[in-house]
Length: 113
Length: 110
Image (tube, rainbow over all chains, first blue to last red; front, side):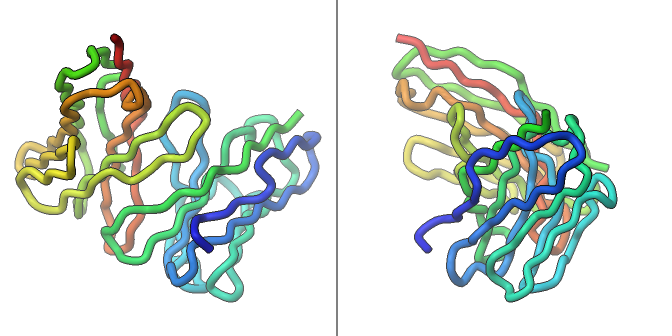
């Protein structure tokens, strides 16, 4: 597609529920990144895919968070047993070259109540 | 780990020039990027410096000094639409993972 698409744009869920956030990167971009951003803060790294494999998942805060990219294109970030502290904007980005700029999606605003 | 410092807020008048500084402490440094983010919007890529010196792109320029672990973003001929948050980010690995600073909120006034 023309840009990075993230769905849903907003998600409200109850504490303890499971959520899936989807990211559709720019066609041909092999690298895909997940970040999350809290109000007044910079994006915080979660995980980075090169192709289908997770090249670096050091930012995932705990084992409730998991992400997949089975065909090297669309990625899903999965959060189990959501907690109120998980509330944030989850940003996905893709890039063509290492060192090149990211193109971010508009994000999914997750609110855990 | 990595740490980045940038001012939290800068105010300038329309038509002026403003410089946003960024200092960093990191290991395995590969380069410094700058991103702009309007309220409620996605971050957008502005520039990337891997080598020392000044890179110019229209009204925006970015500078890097690797020996000083320091960079800056220079915005010229400020316009009201430049009011946004600006983030510096360091690339520290052979991949393209970025660590972002906490951002500088730029307010452009008439």
